[in-house]
Image 1 (cartoon, rainbow, N blue to C red):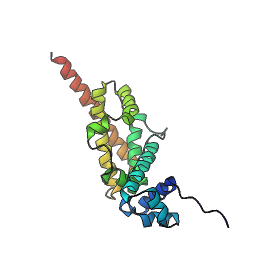
Image 2: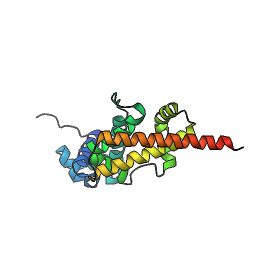
Image 3: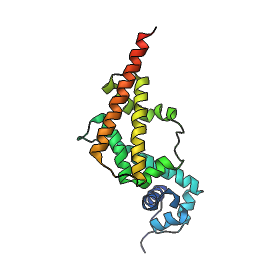
Length: 195
């Protein structure tokens, strides 16, 4: 008789990711994950004492997948706008994972200040700062404008209320970027005019 396949924590999380992809994060429970693994619920409950603990682990894995997706190079796009486009593409290609990450309440950051000051965002902010020539404080303000713009598009698309038109979205993202950089630069001029 062949040895039984060992059901690891990683396999359970990967199976739960598939459950989310198929039906949404609300479908994560011991039975649906066990069915995805073709096993009993015992290994799921052995590794995760509560379904909330499982959902938190699945959220972390979804966040990792999202980050990897965002950082995949897009040679056909301007580097600054590429992250915004990939953010929106993720919502198109992985709508259930997008909803889990940004519309479920499982995010660790609870406000814009936490997000914009997170260490994970520093490489993006540094690239934006270099491209814009602004201070880091002003670059953070530009990022917030562009991020909220991209998030709005992505949310509408993920909830099936808008079709993905990449060229139109890229044009709008570029306008948001240019407008935010211009406003931040004007703010800097206004500050330098006053003692």
